[in-house]
Length: 173
Image (tube, rainbow, N blue to C red; front, side):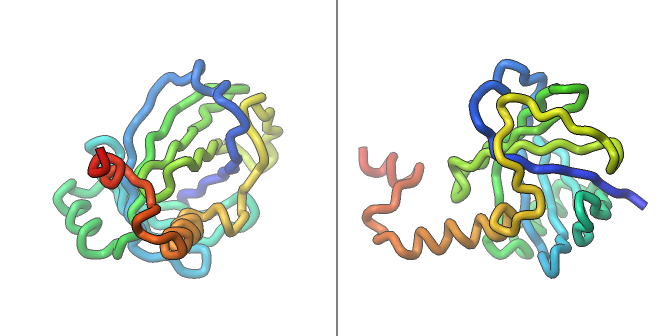
């Protein structure tokens, strides 16, 4: 059985930027999310995968990931993700003996930055780098689907003429 042991944190400062060894562009579509379980389609640069994640039990959760044809992934994003799309740039940063990932979100989640680290065992004593802030592992408000819902609600409360965004900013000039 495939399992992940993952912790998530807010980012306190830009100290991570000097340690970046790799970056990639990710585009995720959430096909289904129920009771802490989810099915996701992802483009990681030009590679497509389908991932099934089970309910979190503490830091542990089941995770199954399968490569799929890019054409299938595009079709799933278009037909089955119902606006639950997320784009981010992921930076890989070695720190304290592990590879951390720092995700900078784009689009509707612009401005959110989350650091994640996968642990080798549940008993692993994690050393927290200075650039890592408050832990948000397991907090419902930091699940992607909940962050998306919160941003959509904010946008609904702001008059369209006052909403900023890349397309509107270009149109205004």
